[in-house]
Image 1 (spheres, rainbow, N blue to C red):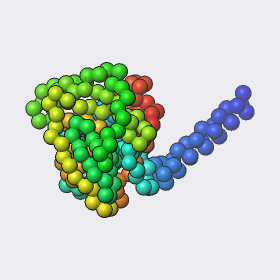
Image 2: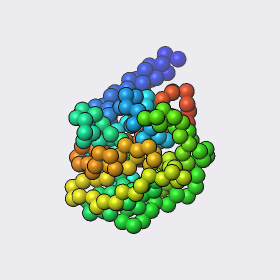
Image 3: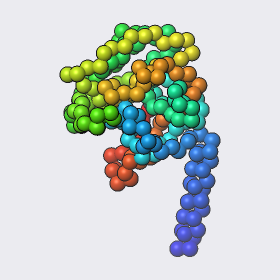
Image 4: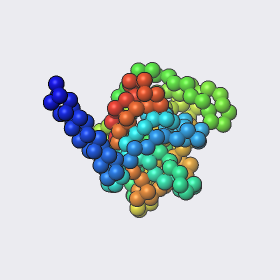
Length: 209
């Protein structure tokens, strides 16, 4: 019994050391803030404030990645979006997104096809359509309002820039609002340790891509 407890103590110690080293060198463990109602609604349905996620400290970001970037309009703050275009890409963004004239596959609706969210300005509940979209081979959920669509914005991504889109396409905070961003200021959000509540098992230990 003493031998087993000694082994367990050593194993636990090694795991803790590995976690600490990874957190210092590879990942940044980050809690999504809850101080900006526009960002709070824009990151739905993928993320919610209070969620703890792992962000890669280094490495290039790719199309389809969910990323954390320095806010172009507020130094010291972050914006969150999904990369849909790089330098030279033609983007048409509204409730749906076309990159170089192609729309990502949308294989099916979410399990809950409708979702009510709080409008950050009017504080009224808005009913949005929830669907699954495939971006660069990775499926993720998006919110849209096809009955009251956002006007399409057309642009060509500048060299050395990337274009970000919120997973909430209707109540967004993305490149339609703050412009294209420098990818050097962005880091890939790769994993959710837990959501706004630890007790929500559906939001624990999930890859985000």
